[in-house]
Image (tube, rainbow, N blue to C red; front, side):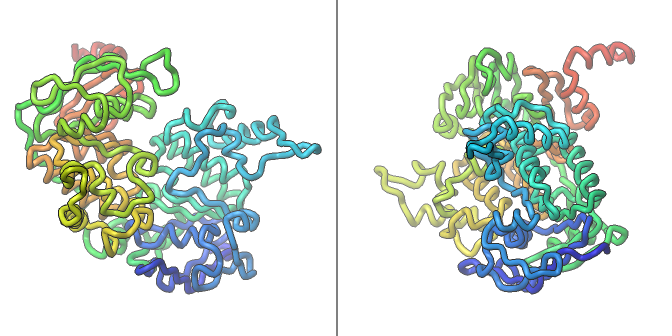
Amino acid sequence: MNEIILQMEHIYKRFPGVLALNDVSIELGKGEILSIVGENGAGKSTLMKILAGSYAHGSYEGKIVLNNKIFTAKNSRAAENAGIAMIYQELNVELDMSIGENILMGDWPRKYTGFVDWKKTHKKAIDVLQTLNVSIDTHMNMRNLNASMQQLVCIARALVRNPKILILDEPTAALTESEAKNLMSVLRNLKTQGISCIYISHKLDEVFDISDRVITMRDACIVSTYAKSEIVPDKIIEDMVGRRVDQTVKKNIFYSDNEALRIEHFRVRHPYASHKNIIEDVSFHVKKGEVLGLTGLVGSGRSELLKAIFGAFPKADGQVFIDGKLCKISSPEDAIEKGICMLSEDRKFDGFVGSMNIRENMTLSSLKKISSKSIINSKLEIKLALKYFDYLKVRSRSTENNITTLSGGNQQKVILAKALLTEAKILFLDEPTRGIDVGAKSEIYKIISELTEKGMSIIVVSSELPELISLCDRFIVLCNGKISAEYTAENISQNAIIHAAAFGQKEILESQIKRGCL
């Protein structure tokens, strides 16, 4: 290992009723890329928040040595001044400020008069975005960006501070495959400059590719450490979970010929350009017990289409048929009453209420079911919440704990419980395993199979094509606001999806003609 620049020794961190870190010690070399892996709730993010100053010195036990000196950060600003920058798992942006303002947040250059030098602010923002191969108007409002672009802005905000240690917590969760590859290239370049990185990700293929060493954590403790030459994927997964995990999805065909949902001639307005549509004349159907994959490039309108069907996003035109009957859906409440529920892409923004506990979030969409004359039946609410709390194996001591005390993956389980409590017949899952560890993914795949076996119809949006291919019975690809291709599980491939998503129907037909297929 290169020169040691960081040591975290015998770290303990306690929350009410929970030991989040139990005698954890790590070290980091100059120019090293160290990955930390483990299930949700293992303590990875908590350890990094201590290093980044989010949890102030004194709120934990143990010692941190940075460049051979005792390091005691009272806040994140102190950590940044010491050369430590962190990109957090949850997007942390000011939506009503510009991209440039977000990137230089807290460090806006000033003129001699004391006023902000906005020209210099945007110049520095443009320069750091170029290191990520991103070309965008930095005067644009952050609210106009999708989750993927917002994540890139967060990465740029960390890089603009020229850190000596860069902490990345699930940095590619919201990125496309090409954006993720670009980030890997950036990290390798930073490594050559002597910058050290601590990398946290549930995408183990990325971890194995980029890391010099891998540390596994389980139940608040460090289990093992592997050099790059010692990495054995199955062994690391077993260390993380504490058991062998079958990552294969056993696809059983449960769907019938009966149609559960049909969408006809849907047009959806573009969220940021009112003069155009992001979805143009899209029609498709889903059978009872079928898992339909909805895919396309970022910006293809996948999420907007699902939200418009669900009534959470305005549509320009289109009809929804459930069990062959025309249904009017103007709001999520209408959709839930008709038997449709949705797990959204951004759990922090519209998935849960941060001021509520686990039980309250689980039953939020089922208040009519647990109420009589506007009064909640507390016993029934507790009973139903506990049922799904146990079924989904939510890692918490009680349903009465606040949802913000949970890891991202366990928050996702609570949101899934909220959907299941509505007893929906049709379920929309938008990036259902984003930020979820390998063990929890396996559990969710099993749940999806169980739900379809009971006759539930599911539409899945996922940026992870191997996951989508393993889960779904049929696939619809969007390109330029239209359906560019449709595949069954028997004739699908990643290349086929990527080609259809990037080039559209015309190019596919021309390619087939050239090959003599038509």
